[in-house]
Image (cartoon, one colour):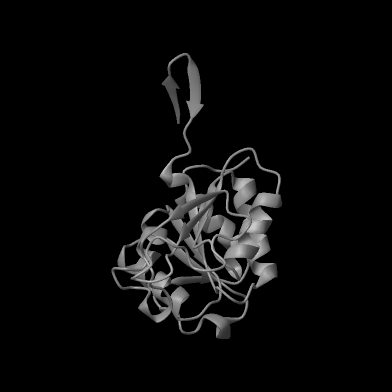
Length: 191
């Protein structure tokens, strides 16, 4: 979408061009995350993560190091605690986040569906969501995506790594299936 601002033209990258990637905050699952990051860069969309380590860091690194003519790497950053809402958690944002959105929301992990979790923002800000292997926090985000009727796909060639995720969510074991899913649910079709 192009909009006029004075005499200059500004290309707006819409919310329907933002893809969320969910996954472990500690385990990088580098091969899976890197493939998704490169794919998103190729599609010319925005990448949105929770801005931390693990999968979030790996996918962000692959995305920002890939050739792209559009899109930005966004991180939605949790605060340290309910009492220290002005300070981000240590390790946030990772060094590949290009736009950090700092929040007053401390909860994650098993508390990831509670109102004080940034997971709601992560899910609601995306047109499609790809979930990689992760723990209770990732499972909570996948469940939220399902609750909010957001297009979500779980990507893992190893079913045992995602067996705790909601069974109602579509699964893929190949990057080709992830690409087909994204082309169906995002506003752009890529280069």
